Image (tube, rainbow, N blue to C red; front, top):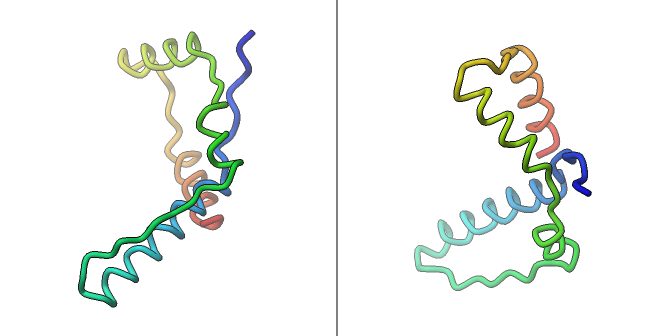
Length: 88
């Protein structure tokens, strides 16, 4: 049984952005190559191994996009980006 697609994990996206920001700040302030280390929580480690998606649906969507048959709504896309940015 293949599970339906899930929305992105916003916590993981925020963590990635925070890590990039921290890494950039450290490298800018020191002027030297930083030797930082990161330890991922168990939840983040499990997220990558437990990812479930419908491969058949993904193939259908890829084919529709490649053939120009997938309807795109620029307004919905822009609204989605705006809501993601607010979470970050």
